[in-house]
Image 1 (cartoon, rainbow, N blue to C red):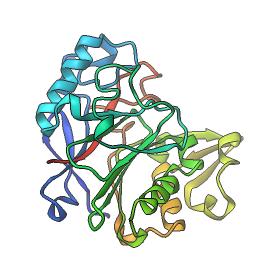
Image 2 (image 1 turned 30 degrees about the vertical axis):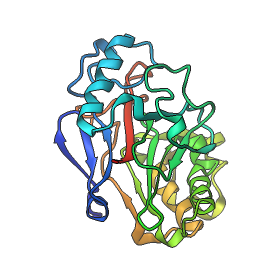
Image 3 (image 1 turned 180 degrees about the horizontal axis):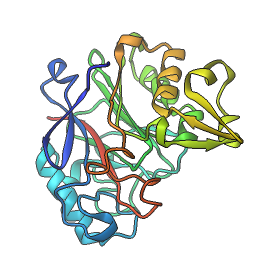
Length: 270
């Protein structure tokens, strides 16, 4: 059994603790669905502005998270997720983008990275896989949103490439694969299965017959990371499943699409 990289201290979030010893300024984790003010399908700590929740409630939830993380809303950077593989380097000039409205979010962006302190990089999830990246040597951090499309289009590899362009050595890059849907609850069709490269198929796909497969998205992301030179012992995977842990997480599949979003975050305090 792999060591669980997340710990629940406050009801609103799981804190990523496996990297804490490397830098006291590093703050990372993912929210739960608990401890907020949203109602109905979004009860209660929904952090997504793009899901028909009451805007004021979402902003109150985000303000709660800002207080818990030590990063005020005006320091947040948010991507407009499109299930793509575009990764963007951000700087202090991007602070506040997407923090209080979707209109100002970084366009067509599913991954963000920075070398600067004082920015909170964020992304939204409700079954898709959160990928957290950290190079303690080069002091670069990143976060990516990897659903099946982003995963097969190798957003993980794209992030590694961007880290290297900014001075990282891949042997130094640490990755944590966070709470997402587990293969037991993630059935896909032939169309999706056919897009997974042959060499890793047997590790991530289980044929259930009749053109149905269960897909291990967390493991597929690990395989992609290993393929691009990330060291096995530098990759941590959570045991949490968004579908199974219904008391902790929103799940798009379990909740038939009517649900809130968790927010994944990583930042280096100034």
